[in-house]
Image 1 (tube, rainbow, N blue to C red):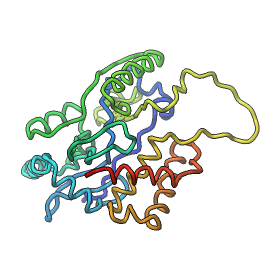
Image 2: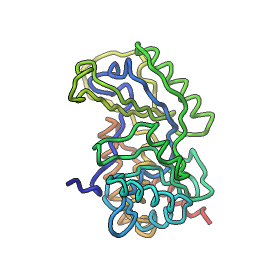
Image 3: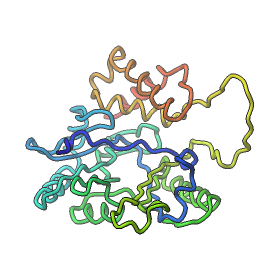
Image 4: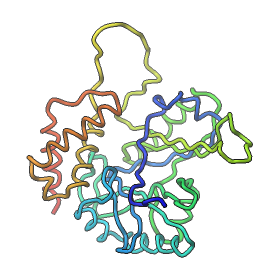
Length: 295
């Protein structure tokens, strides 16, 4: 029996960093959605009602419970989770918890607390629903879903990157920090297998503040490795994870928050193969300042 509270959202790589290579996306139907700038929250149901997990912890802080319960989506999310149980299923509804004020990377300004869904984990089938399934489930309960910008099915990497640029332009127009791409297909090695084991789910993200590596010249040399700095959006995203985990009160205690900020930023550096900023405390203070501006 799966402990539903332990189901975490996967880390998303960029197209350039997909394994074994970006060509894994060729010939697949790819759905491109907006990337909202908030806190990753997973909502699930147990005997005590709706529970919320953060990206790193099985239970989010009280501040995010409060923000979620104050949002217009709290009751519809409960209804959707209960409806799944009525059909012998359990869901984890993953979404961006947008809290009042400036967003973590300052791309958005939120006037109210809002929970916008981007994925649903279906326990009965042990997998994420595709976009159509998520949209249908949320539509019937009046729950907002991340906007779909477009779809593509291409056979060359050049065409894939060209469409990526088009989607990022759309995101910039809409004042979003980037896009998320999702493909639900089959591996070329297992297509048509009766066991259905060929299903391949590939998620990735692309953002404005990351360089277009595929367009840059590439060379190789020996020597001391020089890594790029971690983008500001990733730094503020890591800081927001700390706030999500420990809540606003403890977040304002520097002795409590800064060690976690350093830890989470280090984890992001490892994921992105980047270096951490020397003035990490400045980023923490900037986020504190943003929060104090909220009335």
